Structures are given as C-alpha cells and as structure tokens.
Image (tube, rainbow, N blue to C red; front, side, top):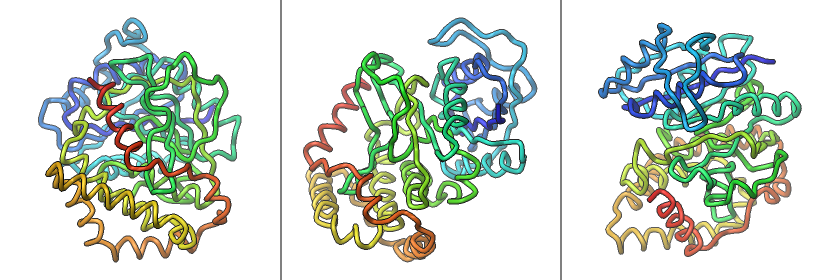
Length: 354
C-alpha cells in the first residue's frame, strides 16, 4: 500500500489531541506518518505533541472503542511555528516536508478536533488505489455530538458562488455504500494524491483559514481532476471547535475567501452567466450584516476587494492552465440555493451543534 502523510495542524487544541491521536494509533493500516504542525499554542498542547513525537502518545479510549495498544505506533514528526500561521500555511509547511519524501503517495490533512474510525484511512487509501484518475477523496464527517448525522460529505459549489458542505444533517444509516463523485473535498479530513498537489499547488496561504479547501477544489477541477466521497470512511468532528460557529473571525474569513475563490477560479463565461446569482447573494448578505450589525460580513468583503490585484494575478495563471471546458464546469455546479435556503442551511448547522 502506498505511504500516506497524515497532517494535523494544531492551535491550542490540547483538549482534542488525545482523542485525535488515539484514533490514529488505532487505525487498521499502519503505512503512514503523522506530521503535526503547532501554530504557536499556549495551552500546553505543544508539550503533548513533543512527547508524542518522542513515542509517548496520549493513548486513551475513543468513541469507536477502547484505547489502542501502546505498540506499533506510527512515527510522528513535529514542526513548530512561533505564531499562528493559519490553517493553510500550517498545512503547507507539513505538505512540503512530507512531499520531500518520494515514498509519500497521499497527503491526508486531518483536523485536530476529529476522531477517525479505525478503518477510515484504509478505506480512503484503498479507494484511491482503485481509482488512480481521482485526485482527492473525502470520507463522511459526522457531528461529534450527533454521530448519527452528517456534518460533511464533501463540498458542493453552487451557481451563486457558495461552497457548502454536502449532506449536512443527513442520516448516517441512509448513506450509500459506494463512492460518489463530488465537486471537492473538505480539508478537515481529506486525501490528496501527490500528483494532484504537484499539478495544481498547495493551499493558498493568503486565505489563512476557511475555504482554502474549496479554492484547491476549484483549481483541481479546472485541471480536470475528479473527486470522490467514500461514505463509509467515518470521522467524528467537533465542528468549529477552534474558531466558534458564527464567530466574527469565521464570518470575516468566509466572506473574504468566498469572493477570492470566485475571482481566482470562475471562468469569464460563467461569470457572465451566473453574475446575477452571485450579486444577489452578496447584496442580501451585506443587508443582513447591516441589519444584524455583523460587521465581519461587511469587512470581509471589503478586504477581498482591497487585495483584488493579487487575486487577479493568480487568476491569470490559473485560467491559462485550465483544461476543463465551460460546459464541463457548468455541469459540476449545483443550482443556486437562494438567500433564504442558504440561511436555513446555516441555522440547521447551528441547531445540530446545540
């Protein structure tokens, strides 16, 4: 089986790391290395990771079973950033280090607030081996507090520019059993083929956090790389445990990075076709922000326009390398949800988190 690099970016995640690492120690495949990147933590979690790098893993029971045995642990390589470099830059540091090893075939970002099913990684790597043309895969992320409900089954991108988690709130027992095509994968628990990353590049570090995976999914699709969802590869996820659901930090980055995704990646012909949907959504989002005094929604969009020239420079490079036709890309985009449907989707997540 090809070797995998599982990447964990940590920022003050001490309360989550024992469960995350215990679940990795219990995986049914052992052909992987853990790359942990600490982003300037101050809660003691860096010490925990340093002990794990020395072989002293914080093993304990997980939601999927008892504590794994303290033998045959995967190696853990620790990289330390003095300050919080963000999710995108943190992952990229580990990606560059892992890809320096020619034996690494798959790079597997995993949030520090997750607990993977013992067969999670084996299911992803086996599916990747069976579908060599596929560039990225994701399993099913489940709400940690509601493990019977889906938190993400990949990313769907809509004609109004929204990039959303697929299948939110779906019942796990009703999921299909075979891999399904998706627009892209969530970097909270994803597998990227080495060849994909070498072709389209890594995460855009300017995004800092949020939608860097949607941007990478866009670039992959523009280059003709399919993505798959593997329904049976389960991961429990404490959604928004780091930044907080609906926090100003999250709302700012979602607003800014949404526009950056579109500026960089949406071809001109599809901009002309879908501009009414995009403008409708953003106009109503601004009105919503004003009505609720949610200044982060407004400031994020203003920040996107301030850095417009940088994104336009990247757009030139991305569009020059595009191999997917407008017609092919249009077929991959889901219908525009409409403003009220998008708001209902957000409130559904809030309800499940409560």
